Image 1 (cartoon, rainbow, N blue to C red):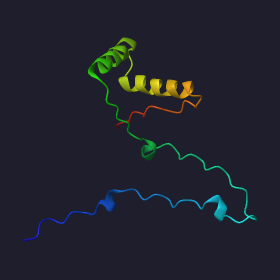
Image 2: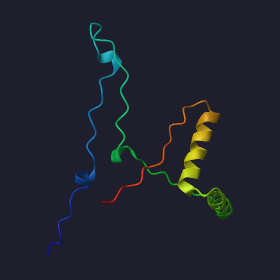
Image 3: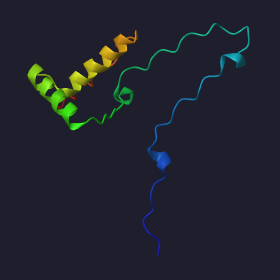
Image 4: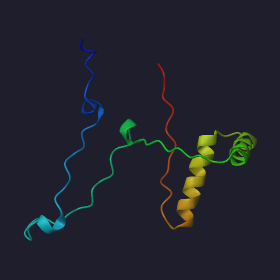
Length: 102
């Protein structure tokens, strides 16, 4: 007796664009390469980060967010940007935009 047919995992994965050719493989008479433009912001541009911290740290961060009257997510994004600045990197971390329901 055969069970239900399950779809292949590949059907759930977004197909990535083919990788560009390495610079060594490009001929000398080709146009000078330009830096790739970052992808347009959108749902596929969002990534999820999960951080596990001790209870005391979580309590203090949650209280600070409440004291500042901001969401904990915004507090974490600010912290990520602060650490990037500390290491002389651009502060490019942004919060996800709320979804507008119609």
